[in-house]
Length: 496
Image (cartoon, rainbow, N blue to C red; front, side, top):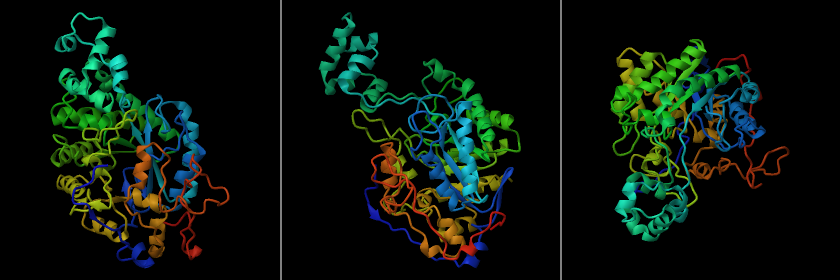
């Protein structure tokens, strides 16, 4: 992963710990309404992909235990990982692109709701993504994948040569000549692996995305509602299809790109189709980027404008992230796929303890605050969820007090300690296990390995009934925690 050249070391801190009385009177532990649903308090576990499904994208026992463990900490809301809306193979990533997934998802919602004692709202993040291939061996690329255009053959002086011989001759030109001979797209495919983009209007299935995606998202949302989720989060962030439509790099000439109005057109059409399908009494929000953090990418000014369009359309909440793009990703090894969190934009999404003077904590706070302020100025009160390096009560409370956001998301901190909010609410914040921001978890995610935290994944490996990683070396969920005073733990009917 890219790292700032300064490499200044930062260390997380519990900061000032509130008493039980202070915590329970705080903004963080006050209720909030998100459209038709209410959260008991404003702690939020954002979507994280743990790679615990199977090749069919089904809910497995490992998936259920993973989310049940977060629910035991009773956060205000948990967003289930990015879940594919198409019924196509996508590795051990959850899918919701067919009715056959509903029963497994029903079991997931039932277990998670029970594990939280009824405290936690459960949403699911709906995602679409375009095809990406692994970086090819150069010889295989020239033998099988390169399209031999007349222009290419003329540039190489191979016009009229039989295809097989031309491919071999091109390969033998060697790397120094390949960059001169290949067009920019083929060169990128050779260096990084072929990747479909929303600008590829020459491909019929890319050209038809505006016709197909609204209904795909709507059908997925209907399945989510049938499965017992409290709402859905439309994934409009990072390197994926909908974020690519919002990106300033979207140059489509069919009315769905170019200008801001064109770029936001499909995301709004998707939202409206989903809303029409599920009705006004079902929560629908979206996650989008405050900034793409790439050259020529979406800026904060763009995102403020997008937020206004989403809010005016009636969306129930906005959750912000930043960066995480393919555009500046590190070159993968041969046989590996590009990973959108390895460049500078990826660092902005998941900064670590080695940082620049700004540091890794609250790195998205100022941009999110600007978006929320813009909404408030226009008389729009759509709740805004902010994430990014938040790891203690004092920081979360300060963000809410300043009006920077309405709900505080903690991804890596929740992974390090699923009980951090409950411990704080009970006045036992000194027992919180702090994330160290080494990005150990991100390294596992990059390799599509089951994601765990180094602070607990080697602890009590002989604990009865625990499930271990595929290599048998790591536990898959955090060890259990029991409050010092069990009577202080809220009963299912209690509202903090």
